[in-house]
Image (cartoon, rainbow, N blue to C red; front, top):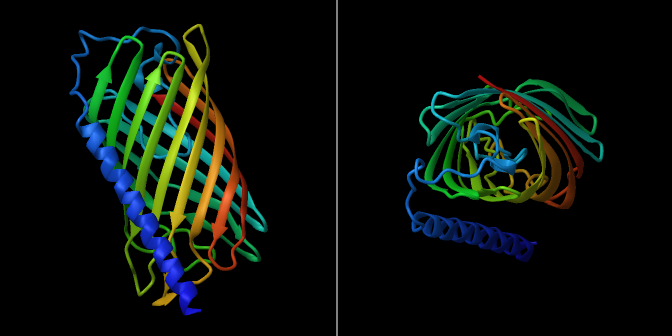
Length: 305
């Protein structure tokens, strides 16, 4: 038993170590890239994915970040996700507002709630934790046929949800998120990579485990018709979660490693955004006894003001 516990500890430290090495390398290469070019001298061709304004260009559906819009631009979104598994279902509705403070800094406020959270015989519903996110684009490179961007993402959640419900609708305490994104949007293709981590705090000796996110994806322009953009995307979203502590005791039936692949279709015009995707859990290694996830349906609609 002790050997098994030691092996799990070694696995945990190895994953954490590799995660932060990856994050540091990512910082090193992006921060040492060439500085911003003057946009007046290098404007991309208005073709394919670049034919619309930056706020209307394709973004990930499930992965975090890449929410930089022009200064003064406001966007409203309504995201709906429905996660199904073995005797498990989690429906999530997320209204949110995105605002461009500057051309390089944005604020993204989301208030999710769940009309249905079912885990075996237990059910709950209600408001979840409020999220306030800032994102800063510290690197931009504009060329004729592509656009590169690297951002830092910081997020704080306010515990509007409940950790006492079963299943819980929130952490019951403030949590913090930090991550980084790098993306390249070309006329025909696009790709991104985004490592990050969530650090919940404790409340009444209860603390949910840290989560380490490793995400990447790619997509391709389908067509442009009368100022409408159509693009397909595929996202790979991995989460390694540590075990929870409930009232000071380690919950052996919590935490694990999950990877979901989500293909989606992006449609946008001058003001309207619609994205629809269907994800599938291709890998899941849970700690202890937990229900397994199977598939995820997601629909996101947005409007630019």
